[in-house]
Length: 367
Image 1 (cartoon, one colour):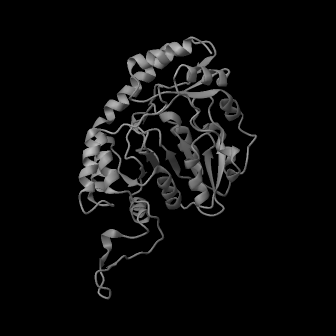
Image 2: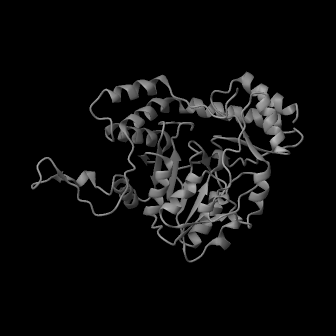
Image 3: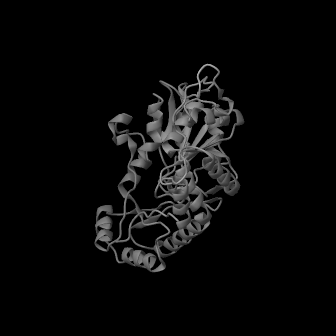
């Protein structure tokens, strides 16, 4: 069986994690900072390591001032982990339609959904392909709204020559088990404003300002936290950071392999009857966490691939089918059409040349 996903954990990552586990400090400490510095050196943006990407999104929403009764423009076509943080802030996701040929939010469907309750625009870079950020930022600026990028799929992607993570007020990355770069379970929040970045540091660790804490004069062995704002227990551990540090030197190899595989798929599948490729503009670089296509008779396609020993998946379904998000919406025609035909085929560093050839030959054989 050729799997849809395959974690990549290097020998260096295993060794670094084992070394941390043999110390007396396995929680949040210097290794977390070392990983954050290494990410900044490699990608050019400064971020905070969190226990997962969902926590990073909630942290962004909190710092952006999203609260009870507020609204956040988002998309339904994503992991529910994109939109549950909005609910955790007691706010309401207002779903915009997507582009049929990218899976990304349609900028043309954002503005009419903005109300006096709207506090942010959240966009998801589906499969690692950057959204139309210029158009989104133009709308956001007009209404004085922050842009929060869910870049869980998009580490290493670029838009108009800039790394995703260096563009918007807030950007979240995921270092989950099957991402390009894994810390096993982890995420990162990038905040462009220096003051809000400092607030993120404090909120990430229960609202405590670790840099300003002092030994208490009244309580032996205790530190005065100087806590002035509420926060969350979202800081990651030295163990997770060590795994990330061990995997980071291999990121370029993993990324390049995915890019090569995507190019092969695009070339080989361009003329297959009953199959439609997604559109990719030359002004941005996709991170290729997924390779998504549209197919006619999707169930037959999935069954054929399964018979051939190849996993396929829709990966995520529209969130508005779930009661927690208010139920099915009827004002997103592109999403309605998209949901009937899209599917993802294997895309990871474990796919060999022979695997790739077998996958495209199986598809060319019909379903």
